[in-house]
Length: 463
Image (cartoon, rainbow, N blue to C red):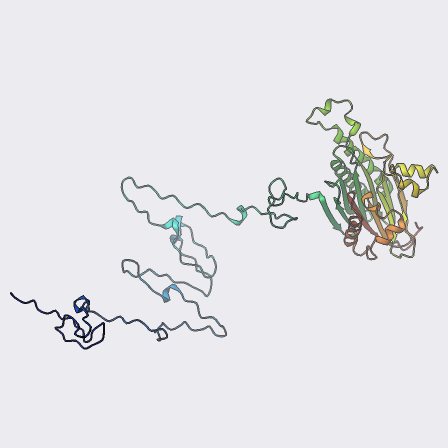
């Protein structure tokens, strides 16, 4: 029987006890380790494990830009590579010192020229110029990617004013807390040269039923004229917000048409109130959608509002009104007395005029604010009140609804809450007055217009 050759294990020492071995040993003589179970070493280059801390020959870092803590930018050409087939990747020149130069006309798809698009443009392939690959007779065209929406196509997101977290849906309510968002008329402000106005919904009403119109124009002699109209919708009537808006717009337009023609401001104010009344009356005549046009009593609760206005022109102060909105005069010199320039069309005013009550008793009665004059198709008769004054000193004209004067009824009370710099900062002063009413409770809509008045050199009288 022949004997098998002893395998060469190629070990100098036993893996188990480290005793020296001979090349023909099959077992360790010291511990009996089976040397045949030791895998033979494969030929090839040794791949030693890199010990932590051993220096690695990384490529040199790009140099730093002079005066900068950052390194210079690397570009694709600095790091060439290959694709999966071992071929060199195509590279294109990349510029960082200016806009990318336009390509020749032939390079743009469709024969057009490519315009530069700014610095640091990435060399990306144009998908419109991609080569089509047919996979067979039944190959289908790859659909083009959907266009990316532009900024103009993305609708603006409105954030809730109450919780400052939820988005406002299309019906004006927050999707998070359900809070109704302010409408355009809930708070309005406007400032022009020589006049400013602020209107606010208040804290108790669900909408703002006040409206105003402020503007300025010139008289035939070139001198300026400033006007302010304030209207208060009658809440017990239908569509009071529309009534006040129509009256303010019509009165303002009438004054702007009459004053430049040379019409006396007091006559122009009278005509403006008549125009406002006609505009409110027309609302009651509009055809409704519920058959109300066939109701013979449709005017019984027609849209209605009050109106008050002022015109400052050529040293003259003209006021006009119907209802219980007011005009106050507050001189810049607070040592001079202020004055209320209008008389209310109200139950309280009638009681005082008849001598049946004093003013304090009348306005303390629950019937005090029942108006006896208004604009509307169901008013008894239109009786516009107008008055003209020539103040002998500078001051400010306060045109307001009862949403303000309820919290500063007497002229002295109004003068105390009008800021001292109202003539110089009418918008800021109007904001302060609205804030005063809100702080007092804001039970009604609040609207106020302020018109600074500069006394003429030769004042003919005083208020």
